[in-house]
Image 1 (cartoon, rainbow, N blue to C red):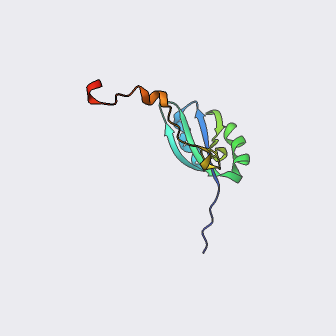
Image 2 (cartoon, one colour; image 1 turned 45 degrees about the vertical axis):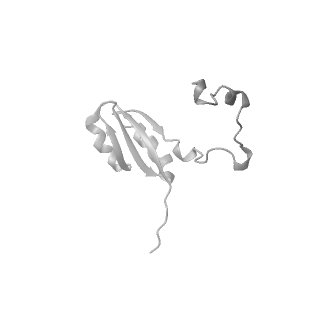
Image 3 (cartoon, rainbow, N blue to C red; image 1 turned 120 degrees about the vertical axis):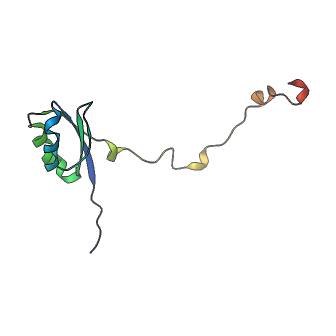
Length: 104
């Protein structure tokens, strides 16, 4: 039995009424429900998002549906060439520091 990694995506569903929030379990795994801000976060397979989002939008208690942009975010920070940055010390800034304790 081999383990396959399945691409997942979070869908944020803004609700009119929190009573029906548990009905969202049939579309995926409900990760979080905020009763104060009236939204729920559902995790579902990425290939099922296109088919399930229109079904969720048609529900009467749903105000708005937004997709998470996390899969499109580039996790690398900076450039590919890490040697392009050098530490530069300004001699003017060093001149402002006291040399001896007598100058303090």
